[in-house]
Length: 213
Image 1 (cartoon, rainbow, N blue to C red):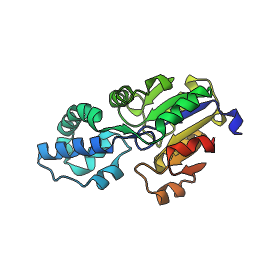
Image 2 (image 1 turned 135 degrees about the horizontal axis):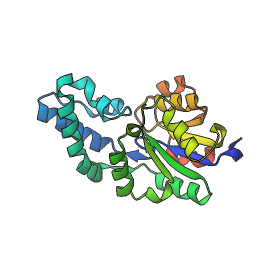
Image 3 (image 1 turned 60 degrees about the vertical axis):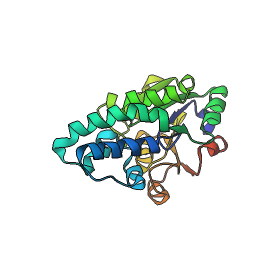
Image 4 (image 1 turned 90 degrees about the vertical axis):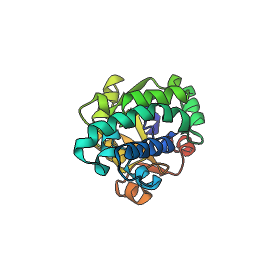
């Protein structure tokens, strides 16, 4: 039952935050510096969600990956501050959920240092009791490790949590962790891809989360 829910775990990119312009800018800056072709924004958006190393790897030679990561990360620190924003309704959702007494946490495949930059820049840090990113673990989503660790942090059972993400891999991670997952269709996955994973709910925008809960 929803009345049992004490913890709400959020993904960041595509769920609460639109950082795609910053990602696209840093990605194509990296391609240009290394002499690779630029990619369209939609292709880059569809590749987001598995961490920056996996974002870059398909587009470059393996021997250039280390250099690409260094260039990308160096550029991305400033681009995130310039070209990222909260999705419409996200701030209100966090504020209202916090006021209702829910524990809020973050589970992201984005490296921690960039997640922290985003959270600080967008002034939402006070809403989260815990932020966990996959680069601090052994596995990226869709492995459920990140969700299991957050549950353990608060000594809660899966039925006491809701996970909110934007991708098929979020739905997979939630299912494997036995956590009900709500997917918002503002991110990297197509709705048809999300439907295949059969999440608990699919919503069109983050502001609809409150009604769902």
